[in-house]
Amino acid sequence: MELYPKLILDALATVRYPGTGKNIIEMNMVEDDMRISGLHVSFSLIFDKPTDPFAKSVAKACEAAIHAYACKDAEVEIKTKSLQAPRPDLPDLLPGVKNIIAVSSGKGGVGKSTVATNLAVALARLGHSVGLLDCDISGPSAPKMFQIEDARPYSENINGRDLIKPIEKYGVKILSIGFFVDPDQPTLWRGGMACNALKQLIGDANWGNLDYFILDTPPGTSDIHLTLVQTLPITGAVIVSTPQQVALADVRKGINMYQNEKVDVPVLGLVENMAWFTPAQHTEEKYYLFGKEGVKELAEKMGVPLLGQIPIVQDICESGDNGTPAALDPSSITGQAFLQLAAKVVTQTDKRNQEQPPTTIVNTKKE
Image (cartoon, rainbow, N blue to C red; front, side):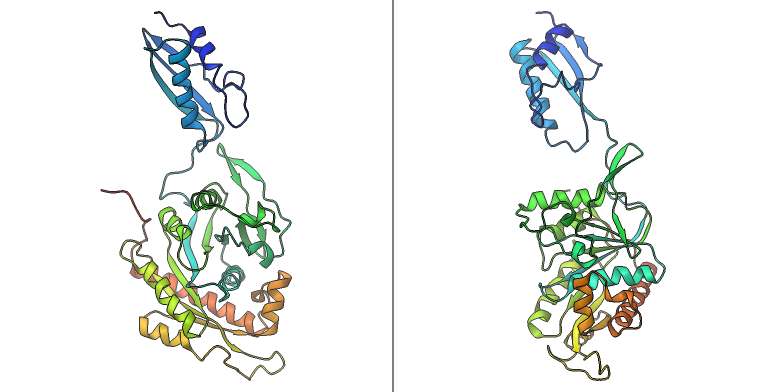
């Protein structure tokens, strides 16, 4: 049986693209590069993005349609192309980013997002270029922390790629899944969906040149953490905890996660949040509501630096709710504490970079 282009195109016209329901011929998805030699036929399919979720299934449907409507013995060779340039390969995903800092906690409720937000703002106030990625897919808090809940990032075409433009406020570039979902509805995503969304916020965004890229990670250990260490060469981790023993038990797990030989991310140090309560009118008074210096003692035991102790003052709660991070006010007790924390993080990051080789991404493929 002789094969010719119209026979092949008629067969391909029976294949519909799942995203629109239209056939691939009317969508101009078949490139004009068809080659036929005897029973061998080759051509290319064009997709909008290199990460199109239907690429494989459409290619298989094309092969099946040619066998069904043109020639059952045809040898079909299909290449896929995209209109958009592909995402850079790992580990060169963010070439303009110098330091990637993961802010983590062993458990929820210790103020990790408050620390991550204020650390980012404080670093910016110290003159550094800073980005903040809210990695908590199920409970994003950055939009509220920065009072940008109504913000809707748009994409811009850069070097053939459509990249999300982060929202900028207080000198910090910010992205969060909270910008793309209904804030009043829970984000019920399976692990794979959440991880893919996170990869898009990392690799399909225009982060540009950054001195510090802060990752506000979810509490505990999860698929998100694994995705982060598989996707980014994290410079170091900052672990946040409150002083009480129940929180400190989980801190050890967090430290061990990063120091695991397969992950091997340096721990820059610990932050003791809610270290004590200080009345705004009586700044010299300290009330240790959750225990005294538990994180400081743990840092000494585990041989990691104590980066800072953040007190509880009424203004830190009010500033978080109002979208004006405490680090914006260097005259306040908490503002001073966060600026000191940022300076310590800079010092420890520089020390780490001088003494240790760059972190590599975790490779889960079998040798």
